[in-house]
Length: 160
Image 1 (cartoon, rainbow, N blue to C red):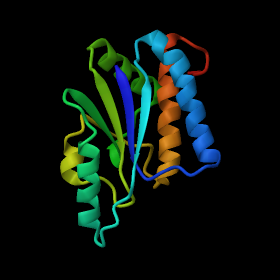
Image 2 (cartoon, rainbow, N blue to C red; image 1 turned 45 degrees about the vertical axis):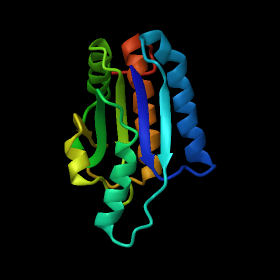
Image 3 (tube, rainbow, N blue to C red; image 1 turned 180 degrees about the horizontal axis):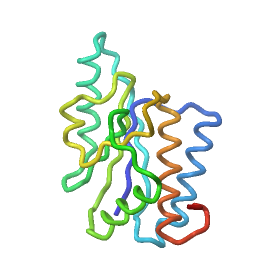
């Protein structure tokens, strides 16, 4: 299974980008041994439309264009389900074992995801009730993906 992160907005050079890249590289090292075919990150520009509904629609169209058929979509959304790390790892492992070709994680723009796009998600995932900057959400997601791989591998990174 290939993992893909689609994010509205770019990470600028600096600590967030460095940390995100560190977790992506760590995942690549362990993920291939576990049957994952890599982790791609697609950064899409924020819509410049004047009103939120149009911005959300523009961004949803750009996101949808990158989602291949038979992919599972996971939407990052503050109203989503909160999973602990072991539960997240079990879910990724289940999809991998079911031969899902792609799991696509979607991080929307400042206005969030278009409700129609969010409804297409197999899982809406939240990192808590607090509002997080998109850059931090991406870093937290990549860390959880890496942590999931270590859990699936029985590596001591995760301590229960």
